[in-house]
Image (tube, rainbow, N blue to C red):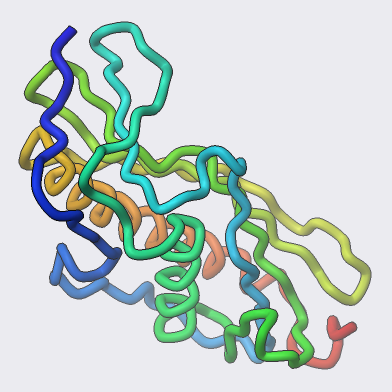
Length: 199
């Protein structure tokens, strides 16, 4: 079985938002006067690590394998959440975006469950970064689920190695975050302003 090159030498670390420098396009939206809480994404314990995972789909394998000498600078759930918060704070429909560490009240919560964040090989030289997550919007005044949707994005990897996989996952993450922001923009007219939904 042919496996993608892991790369030798010292450990190389990657982050989101650094590999692809293309600016994120903001969705056209009028800010909603309400506060959104975005907690750190949840992920299975075996998956939520700093490892950059790949899967050999062409060999019929569903098993994720980590690259030996490359990793993320932090667990993928933290990296994706930081990127999501930053995007929504700058370009989302809510007036403010908080993390639990802020210790402030919020009107709504966006819960994220990460289901896939890996490089998938369709043959020994071709692969894509695949990011899939479930997003749930909750009204904190009554803890009612207002909307839920699974988003998945893929981006081709320019190289069949960890560097290519990291770049593809970076691009797929940005596309996923833009899709989530657009989804929230569409939901905004149905949401109540601050004070009316506050817990």
